[in-house]
Length: 347
Image: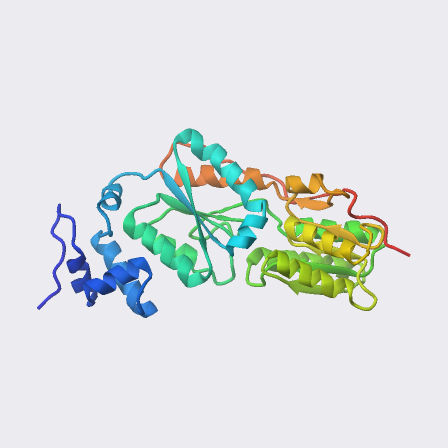
């Protein structure tokens, strides 16, 4: 006996989804509520079936499938404490909202812990018809999200990916290695020879590009990195990395951090160890967030125009969602902003 299918013009039922997927109605509920002990294969089959039949768990979501929700998703794979402590996303969202709010669009921010949960969120959003599109952050090596969103039929843009020709267009400044390269040259010009880098997660594409720029700039000067330490961007990881570096024998005289939040943690850690910034240790961040201008000493950092990138991403996604919006082309590359946290290498 063949599995029932939904008749045209009638909303499908949970029983039809269950029958088509070869599971119970309870399993369908578990797949959407992330409960029970379903295998990943079974959960994906249920979600794919629901998308194919056009079923969602609630009537309002079903109604939204036939019209625009005027909502865009920003799914961020970060622990909640990291997101709360990192103003980078506040700047990014500010730029996006400047374009979305005047056009009556809202931004749905969702935090996830891992890849499987992240993919499940997109699948659920598509099945329920909750969003018109998505902004992707943190492009990764072997990133599965562009193909997934293309399969789900959700328009999307990717922030900062070096490949601008893939299934999801990329938005951001080019030459992601340029800012770190400029920072290293700045420090070498100040006499530093022992320079360390506190990087982000190794699987991120911008981590790989910036590390390559860091090492290449040192190599061009006949130097090698004092150390390269990867972190998850958290405060605890930044503090631990800084402690390991400044407690080392023949410690580095300068540290470059992958974002401003970690640089601030690094400055505080070094000062608690009795080191002066920049007298004993120069510190360089990345992002050029407002907080860096109010520190003492003010933070030397790399400006990647976070708000403008957010605004450009919103405009591009609106255009892909069918809105009459001119796309904004971002020119230039990340640039160093030299302030007082970097100075001559100690004798």
